[in-house]
Image (cartoon, rainbow, N blue to C red; front, side, top):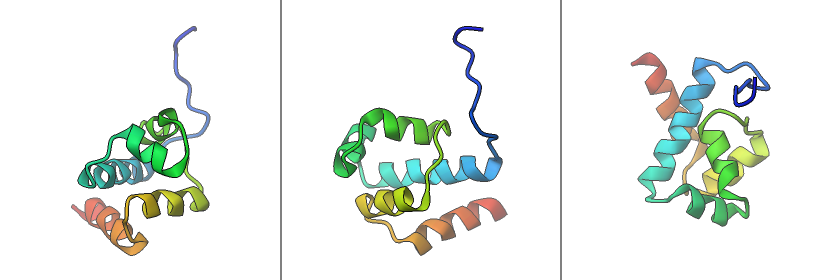
Length: 86
């Protein structure tokens, strides 16, 4: 059916939390999707798809995003761990 969204990969609650933490980190830095995308040389739609869990992030992209967000990986993963145990 036209307009129906079928993910190309199975989603998981854990990955949704990962994406939510990326959104939180972006907002904590006061950045829009456009501003973050510009910092890493990508279109705004790239960030939007990550945040909507329509696109997975590989480790190289993840490090690039964290650098642009001025966030340390251990700090980021700790927030995910705390969210999982809450």
